[in-house]
Length: 164
Image (tube, rainbow, N blue to C red; front, side):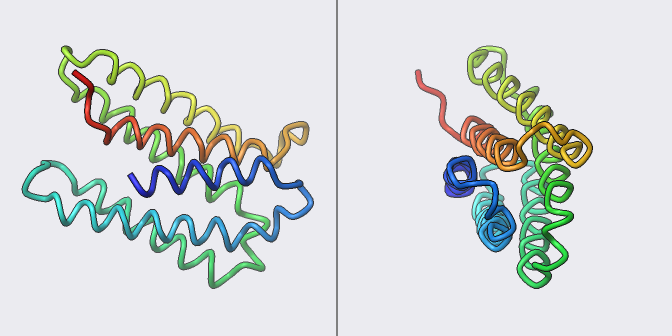
């Protein structure tokens, strides 16, 4: 749940700030990937007995931790490639969650649909983020923020307990 909340809060913060300081956000986004990765690794190790197939979450946590570490160490290069990095990572997470939604039992249709729709929107935003350097008419901060918000919302939907 902590990676979800972190993604959502950073997404809202990115939307609120002026676009001129986008370059200064590299460290914040890098820390976000690092924190999310560490918590995903922790969650997958802690719940390995309770949940099957958490290897994907573990690998995603390793990938997020690695990307966060690289982003923190190479901030001068990251400003140019940040939309691609975030877009690809978020698109992979959205595809993973869309696949995950197919494993819900049919009795939990609301959670299944909300997970599917949230992550389809997140995937579309991630793909737009990848194309943002080409599509100059879309503010980079807005798309980045929305992509992070929907990624966090998708994680929240995936790991929340269903209400009965």
